[in-house]
Length: 189
Image (cartoon, rainbow, N blue to C red; front, side):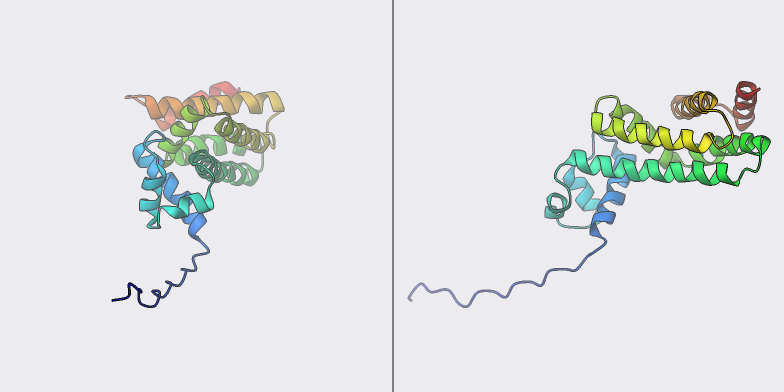
């Protein structure tokens, strides 16, 4: 025996997967919703996306970058809902109803989205990159609100909306849709 190995094994063709990065971001949101930011790892995201672990470092330089991308996607989706609801409102009364629906139906309508929002708020308190995501989200929300309300009212109303969402997410006795309606009407008088 001469110690020569046989011919090299043929290389596996690379899998063409142009949507992988997007799937990883979506998988990150799923993992965050299930395990929280603290339980989100490269390994868990790769598993949820059904991709090799090495894909993580190919597409993202760090877990922080992935979290920022995932939360940016989440915040962008919420901001689009603000835009859609408020741009459809023809006058101030319709805008008030749009805000009520936005809180009751959209922001509180999905437990997954509610958990993601709370996870973002908590993570942003310690992470400047994620704080930038929340700042951009608040700016877009206020911009949508400013279609119908002055800048000061829009900022205060945005804070009320966030407070209502956090209160509902954390309370064992969340406000009913009628209580939310009352709070918004009372504020906007």
